[in-house]
Image (cartoon, rainbow, N blue to C red; front, top):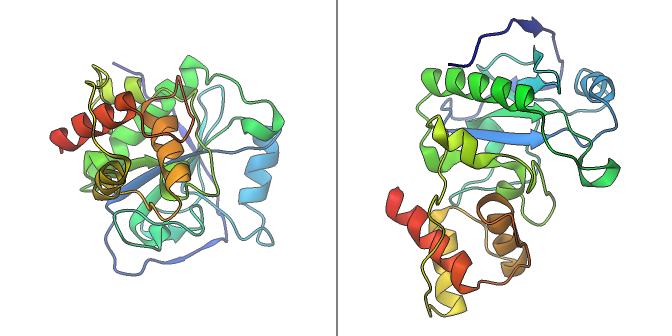
Length: 228
């Protein structure tokens, strides 16, 4: 059992009313800034016009910035399962990490524990399907890489958060165009195929990210589709 830690509450002015009213997605990000302090200051700055519902620091401290009832501005131009305006239908969690630009590094265990605890609470409050627990790169594959290949999606799945192809993929000779159709059916925008494949690999096959729909990538995708 992961111990509960207190949440520090702030007020970010960067939010508005949800359109449609439903919450059926959970989007995980890394902050991509040099320090957690810089990231928190930016998310609270009205001039930045960006926010998230929560920030999880490297020591496991959790900050609440926007009420879950409101739309935080975290996903930008994005889409999932054929729908845009991901912000209106999602809870956004920023995880403090410098990211690929400033020295991407593994996420501390205490931080992942805090993310798991926070995600479990969100999932208890909202009817979010496992396939809709995604990374920023999944919903914006041409623009984003976060939370990246070092994030422990498999550990989250062990707590019932999201999906993971535990046994890898069986080999297949499925043509590339058929692979894209499967990728789109899972939820990805495949208008730029290599970016969509790389985003899938970053999440579900992090040991090799090349944007090529090889047999292992397709096999893992098939296993995920069979699980939903």
